[in-house]
Amino acid sequence: MDFRFTEEQELLRSAFADFAKEEIAPYAAKWDEEDYVPMGIVPKLGEMGIMGVFVPEEYGGAGLGHVERCMALEEVARYSAGLAMMVFTHHLGVAAILDYGTEEQKQKWLPGMCDGSCVCGLAVTEPGGGSDVAGLKTEAVLDGDTWTINGRKCFITNSHCAGVTVVTCKSGEDEKGRAIMTTIAIEKGTEGFAPGREENKLGLKGSFTGELVMNDVKVPVENTVGEIGKGMPITMKELGEVGRASMSAIELGILRGCLEDAVKFAKERILYGKPISKLQAIQFKIADIRCDYEAARLMTYNAAAMKDAGKVGAEFSMAKYFISEAAVRAARNLSEIMGGYGVVNEYAAGRYLRDAICCLPSCGTSEIQKMIIAGETLKKW
Ligand SMILES: Cc1cc2nc3c(=O)[nH]c(=O)nc-3n(C[C@H](O)[C@H](O)[C@H](O)COP(=O)(O)OP(=O)(O)OC[C@H]3O[C@@H](n4cnc5c(N)ncnc54)[C@H](O)[C@@H]3O)c2cc1C
Image (tube, rainbow, N blue to C red; front, top):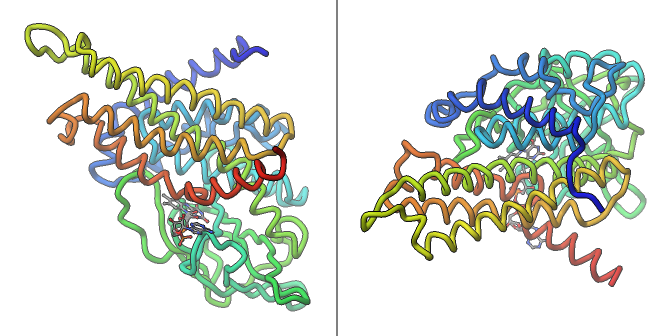
């Protein structure tokens, strides 16, 4: 076993880190304060290879893997978890097209998605409950070679900026009355397809989260992503494997922010004539944040490496569950280390906590992850 990154991966990581320090760090607090989505940075993310990091070069991507994708997300999220949310959800939609799309779809959409001229999205959740994917109601009816889609999605990242959104629809029922799903790509500007309300979130500012409304949207059958009727496994695979490793990487970025800020503050804050880093109670909190970060790092990159190796398992859910909770824990620890300064918006501690809380439900709540983990454990052990 060797848990180190390769030399090439380390070089890439430092390139992503330099980019994030220059292009994201100076503005992250302002984006958060003004709830501003920095669309201007998307072409730069494209130039850095981040938008299409795992897409083969023939479609305009960087031709790398999911480990490198998670590295990019960690570095972006170190300073702006909100912006990282935009990138992660873009990757979800891109992955669906790459894994299941036709050659024509890949040629048509992937180059723009890689260079940052077209942001992608994946819309599953509905007002009726995100955990109950099988209960979704957005209906797609195929007549000849045209789908007619009606419904409403909510909590969708990139709702107000995506050029293409892969939408999970109910396209029928089986003989037992269970929903049959199909995933269909809808382009921005298609008649009847529009963003609805934009949510005013607690955190993860720097990304749009909102509704998508579909009223008699006509879409050619060529926009079907994957086989008709196979939408459920497609959606669950992308959410499960790409989505949960990504959320883990974003939360890892928040954890690193907590660790770096905790160390800095503890060394600089003087009480009783010496830095508070000399106090054992403060050291214990720093030790807790460090352990959470190191465990989270192993779990994130293990999940990403599993994806690259084509392996499946509950490790994706374990990473998402553990790191979601760890990020909230670390942000609280940081806030406490900082005393009164921990709740002052001039410092990032409050933002980390708000962002970490907003990560909890994204890509499945902790309860849903625990159900998946328990299900696999009870089967295997
Ligand atoms: C910032 C953000 C971005 C998001 N982006 C996207 C996106 O791009 N695309 C998308 O499709 N969705 C997106 N979502 C939606 C997200 O996937 C859902 O919020 C999540 O799946 C939970 O669904 P829900 O909010 O409807 O909660 P519900 O499903 O209504 O759950 C409510 C509560 O019930 C619990 N619960 C549900 N089922 C069970 C069970 N069987 N056993 C025990 N407890 C249970 C849940 O854990 C939760 O505590 C996003 C959410 C957020 C917060």
